Image (cartoon, rainbow, N blue to C red):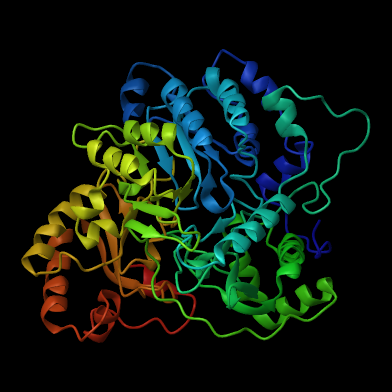
Length: 571
C-alpha cells in the first residue's frame, strides 16, 4: 500500500519480488529441495531475509573455488529473535547445541540483542530452523523489510522499571510480527493456506519499504542507542512506576560511500505517550512509513529520509491523525552513558546479575578462554536468565545468593572474568562481523579490531588511561551495523586494509562523530590516533570524555544537527 499512487516512478525490483511472493513464500520450498546447488534462487534470497536468513558465501574461499571451476561456497546466516534480549538457560543450551551441530561451533551475539548462527549449509537449513522452533524461539522478521528484533535495556539493576518496560517491548514485538503462515509452512511443515486470501493487516502485501528498528531505553542508560532507532521509546519513571514514554522517530546510521544523498541521522523527538498507548503508537508510526516511504530507491527508503524530506511536524500530524489523539509534551530525562556494566551487581529484585564482556559478541572456545563451554556449564545449573546486551555482551541474570558461589567458580574456571583484566577501551569496543561471511564488507572488522585494540592499548597504558572508558567501534562497510558513527573513535571500512577514522561522538549517544582522517591504511591507524590519545591524557578537563575532548581540542568540529552532511562523513 502506498499513499502516492499517482507517482509514475517505477517500483524497485525488490518491491516486485515482494508483490509476487504470495506473502513471503516465493519459491523457497522448491529452492530448499534443489540439491544441484548450494544456493537458493535469486528472488528467494530477498524473501528468505523476512524469515531471518541471509544467503552468503565464504569469501576467503572465493578465489580458490573460482580457479577450480566450482560454485561459491554458499552458506547461510540465521538470525534468531530475542525480544528485549532475554532468554532462558534452556533456550541457551538448545541454541548452543545447534551452533555445534550445524554451524561453526560459535555463537554471535548481535548489536540488536539477537543470536546469529553462521556457516549453516542449505542441506541442514530446514533442520536448524526446526531446532530453533523446538527451543520456543523463531527467526521470522529478524531481517527483511519489516520491524526487526525489538530492543530493550537489559539491565535489571537500574530500577524497578525494567520489568514493565520489557513487557511493553515484547507486546510491541508480538503486535508487529508478520501474520503470514508462510514461515510455518516452509520451515515447520505447517498446514498450507487453502483457497482463501491471506492478509497482513498491518503490513499489506508488500510490507515496508525497508527495515524498521524499534528500541526501548531506560534512563540514565542509553545502551540501546535510542537515537539511532527508527522508533524509540524512552521510559519516564514516576517512582517505581512507568509513567509513559518519550517517543523518538527517524534515526538510522546506514549510508553508502559513493552516494552523497545517504547519511547517518539521529532521531527527532515526536512526543510523549502513556503505557496503554505504546502498541498503538508503534503501529501508527510504522504504517505512516509503510504508506509514504520511498519504494523506488531503496537507499532512500528508511524512515529517516521520509522525515528529512517531509519534516517532523508533518510526520507528527500524520501519526496523530491516525491515532485519533494528540501525543503529549516530552518529559525531562537524562542519559549518562551508552555502555554496559560489568561484574556483579545486586538488582532491585535482590538477586545478583553478572555483566560479562564478550569480545565483538563472538562466543567460541579458545586456548585462553573456553568461553562457549563455560557458559554452557553455567546454563546447566542457572535458574535465572540470560540477557543479551546491545553492545554484544551478556548478563547472567537473576542469580540467587545460594547459586552465586557456584557460578562465580565457573566464571573463574573458564576465564570468563575478562572485565577484571581488560582496559576500558577494549571493554567499550564493538565490531560487526564483516569478512569472511558478509557480502557487503569492504574491509575486515571482527577479525581485526581485537588486534588493533591491543596496539592502541600500549598507548592507553603508557598514558595512564587503562581504566578510562573510550568507545571504539568498527565496521567493514558504511552500513553501520556496529553503530560506528556513535563511537568516540569510529572506524569504517573503505577498501581492503583502509578505513575512514571518525572522532567526536558523545559518550551518551546523543551526538554523531565526524570524519577525522579518510582512507587510512591499517598500519597507520595507531599513528593517527596516538597523538589524540596522548593529548587527551594530559589536557582533558575534569570529567571530560574522549569524544568531547576531540571536539574541544579541534580535531573535529562539533555536529550541529541530528544528521551529518556528506562532507562531514566522506572524503
